[in-house]
Image (cartoon, rainbow, N blue to C red; front, side, top):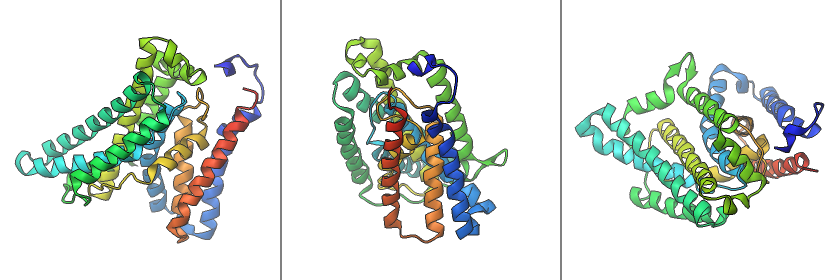
Length: 327
């Protein structure tokens, strides 16, 4: 908003997003490559691209609501519920309807669940005026319970090979299908945020959150649809992650909440709202994925990885404060 009126020149604060993060990603890859040459092997590079693409969707979900000065703590529960529900639909329908129709029904079911979760969150935040942290913390608990209940707490197996191939292994122009889908979604979000009224309103909401309460019905609709968008993005992550694991997992999204927020913030989204673009989830997802893969190659204990994610979130918050100094 106000940045658009600044005179041309070097903005050291903006360099944190545009230069520091790419350099940090390169540095992480080089350090782990020196320790483990397999870090830069062809197979591992493809693995990093796929993993970061999957993580990109939950980071994007956070971006859409962080811009409005909100959070979505239910993204992990969304992923888990989509995973088990879509898997149950597929395994139930494929014997009678065939693989193609069963997979389509499962995917549609997953996307509709994402829409529903986003709509519930959006209604609570935009219309009931409940604090986003409280609203999505409550729905996180509710939908996690649903995921565990309908699956009995056990994974759903016997998913069709065609599902794994079509949403995980297939290549388009030599790129894995998750990377292609992530690229298309990234373009769509970038266009929405930079070229549409809806995108401009989201930034205004972040700059002045009171607008959501006094700006009338249409402004609240934009806030509502920000949460619906987050729900759909998380559901896409749930579908793709399910295809990767080959089973519906009731705990698939358990560890995604903190990481998704950290990815968006370290990438450039402001916790104060009103700032952030598509580069935020791209940079953030790549950095966290490279760190995670590198730590796995070094056989660093998995319990330490949440420590690293927490440190990244603290650093991202500090970087956000630096970017916003004097704003």
